[in-house]
Amino acid sequence: PEAMSEPYSVVSGARLSGLIAGAINSGSIEGILFEDANGDGLLEGSEPRLADHNVTLLRNGNILQTAQTGKQGQYRFENLRPGEYQVRLVLPEGSMFTNQISDEAAGTGSAFPQTDTQEATCNVTLRRWRMDVKVNAGFERAASISASVFFDSQANGQSASGTAQEGILIALY
Image (cartoon, rainbow, N blue to C red; front, top):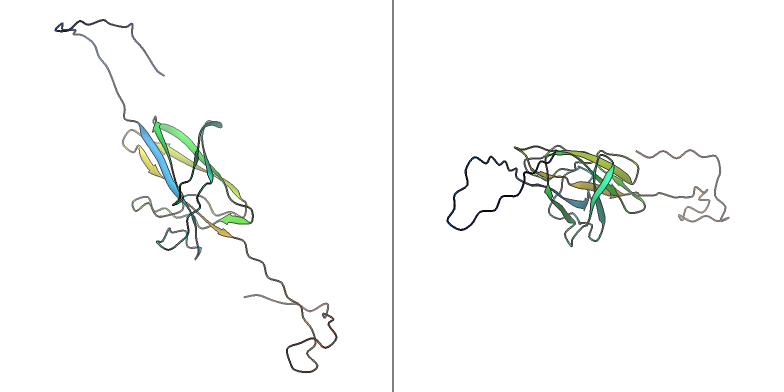
């Protein structure tokens, strides 16, 4: 809770004693939104960053701030007090979060849990002794595979009839 005393007027050269004041440092939450090309959850130099994307900061379910990622996928929320926060991201259509990596010392790991959805929230705690936290997010774009199975009667890699075979099981490994 915030507390405030009555205002005091002090003229130049005067001394005022008996006041006790406390102050806390403000903190920040920052990170990078990146396309995790190899799906390992780590931000590596050559992996593309996602620019111009919204990142939302919440506290107790209420939106406090929204930031937009810069050219290198970076975002930052500043002037935060100690406490519990949530960082929410909605990824581009057809994307999903990659592996969650706890790599706070280097600040290169993805803090978001791996999920097959496009939206996720990461809980963050700012403490008096830890007021600057990195919250990166790695994502990968969904892939699709399609094919037709046909009888290659002429052994030329082409379907002579143009008709696909039905009922054939195809396994991917």
